[in-house]
Image (tube, rainbow, N blue to C red; front, side):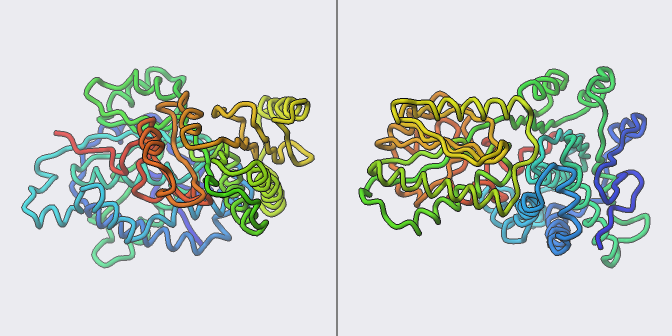
Length: 457
């Protein structure tokens, strides 16, 4: 059975819903001197990997907590936990350090770099968690902790209202592992609560918000434009600011060299992968596809995949459970979109869907292929377009807001004159279908590296 961190300053319970809220306690942490008992990025990575492995083995206990707190179905909760913890393994960290050019602390010292504690002081990193998907929050906290290991800085993590389980549980397990290791017990040992505080306060408290935000050397903020502006406008001019805002993703299948309808088995396999990307988080994340572009091929090929995708979404609805509760305005919009597509007399638009909303809704569209944000919750638009240049033009209105493209086939199938402009528009991830919601540790989220935080003098 898992337990939380046994340290009152972290205020972590087994439900992960009790962050520090005492203002005086938060200010003491914000104003505290930087710490010199550090274990380096490699030490933190080792603790994180071990803790992640142990927590994954306790899915039966952790899954229901995440499902309740984050508003997921049981299958969605398991998917979310695996997505956040599976990337925390030694191979991923080695690849991260190699590709992003940041050597582990021990290797830096071996190569003649000065002791970072003697020269750098990172200060305070404020992380504002967002949404219900735990992976970005988990990785942001770990990244800031590792970067701050070089300068003795501190991390203040303010969680969203929903994602309040996995981060505190991971930190708690890391502390327990550290305590159990030889030479790391008692007052002289490494204590995560000296370096990280899990806390919250109402944004409406203007004076307190300004006090805390103004103390941060670095801000990492997840949220909509209004949230990012709130924190950025109150940060000091010298602070580093990294914002992660709303983005839009899509999927594509290249049938340019296909004219036959192919086998239903192949279509069903593709449809199952797309349905997983759609269903994983009810399309509420920036990696969730809003549209599927069928590039080239005959109408029969495209419609064959469309029909298979309807079956795939119905399977996901049955196996993973219906989508979580949605806002009334989202349900109203889905009903309205269904009616528009069902009433189209040109036969260039039509809709398939489950009987209930929320359920699933699949839209066939030959009339307009421009990328359109949809309310999510199992709603996907399928556009049949002649070639890749058409896809590029379809998504161009979202220049700077693109996130990921799930691809049926290899990246080599995408011509350079399509891939290059897509990357210029901000596309940060191209991956196989079925993997859109499982980014690796070294993914450039919103174009930022895993270590956006750098030590400052």
